[in-house]
Image (cartoon, rainbow, N blue to C red; front, side, top):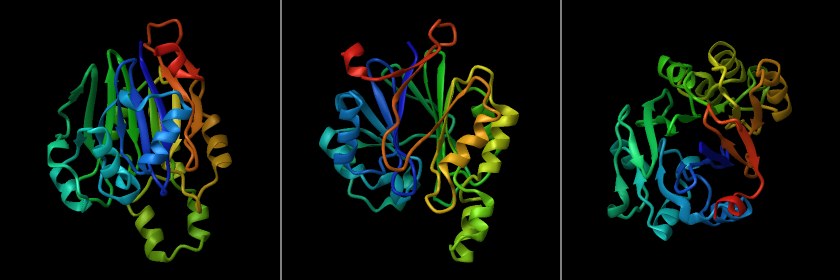
Length: 273
């Protein structure tokens, strides 16, 4: 069985990640419009009806801008902490709001979603690991540092969306004002290529089939540079750049004991519906 995953968009212009099994799925964040979410899901052959819930990592606009319309239109439960909800300033239907706690898994059908706290300049930010049977996918973006919790969860994942936000030299020599540069690299901002590369080099499990490098800066990074860096140390793990302009292909992250470890699914609708 395993999990099917795609990045619908990844970057400061909007973040939205899809993880699901054959019957149900969740979105991690909803930072693109409802219309754009629908378009990208349709292009991938993924019916909107498969989505059963949305989990929100934190209150920044590039993670929540599409949330009110999407949740209302499809009557989707929104899992969000009270602190994050207070910081959103969004009109959400009270009946659709659910809370979650770090370390305590939430079950959505046969999916299990576990949150853990991360270092980011938001009220109550979290990363997530989505599991089905014995397959685990991590969503690790908007990270100020590589903390012990991140290392522990990363080591358990068969696939991961991992932030590689900026190249240190490009950020340092770029046009951003100093206060913004310091915010990005100050420990509660974003993860650099070097920090992400060190995490992968030291802690990537041998069974990780896919690494989706995510939330790349438009001005302070280069997708070609990032892919080149990570391909050098990826081994058998496939490296994919999650785009800020379009969706990635749907990937099947298979059970470790399956003979088909991972495949790219060209049209999921044909094989599953």
